[in-house]
Amino acid sequence: MSDADPWAPVRVPLKVFLLTEQRCPPEWYGRDLYLFRDGDLVWYVGQSYAAFNRVWEHLLGGFKGRSTVGRFILCNWPAAMNFEVELWDSRAPRFAAVQHGLDAAERALIEEYAPCFNTALNRAPTPVPPGYALPNAVPKTRSLSRLIREARYAVQAEQRRQWLAEGQE
Picture (tube, rainbow, N blue to C red):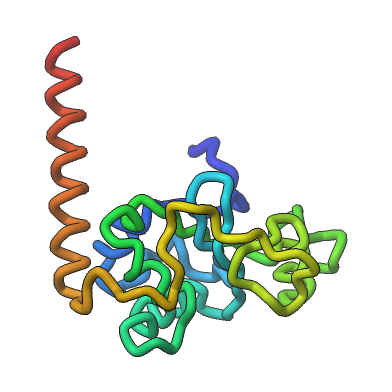
């Protein structure tokens, strides 16, 4: 039996998320809140009854300028492949104080993290730090297949480095 907390958020690098190629892993079903982040800095918090699908909508919407966070990722590629996607569940004990309401859980996360690109419900959005291209910059890529290919290469390179390091021990 696993000791893993079933309510812990699913947290994966964007490059790994891209390799799901729009097929939600069964253990991610039911997650209805999502975050885009880079370390401690949260870019965006959102909600959807199918958070996995909504994250994909943001990524695809970036190509057409329909998603600020999707566009931001494209403008900061390839560094953005190391951003993380988190999928949360509003039924988690952490949201008991807000009666597990989806809107209230989203609001609680926005209040806690003050994401850069959430303007509604966010009294003081965190400014985008220097060194990041803003979403109105020219995207570094315009191809989903290129994003996925580069993500695959990066993940494979990390796996090779890990394998080599383990062989050195």
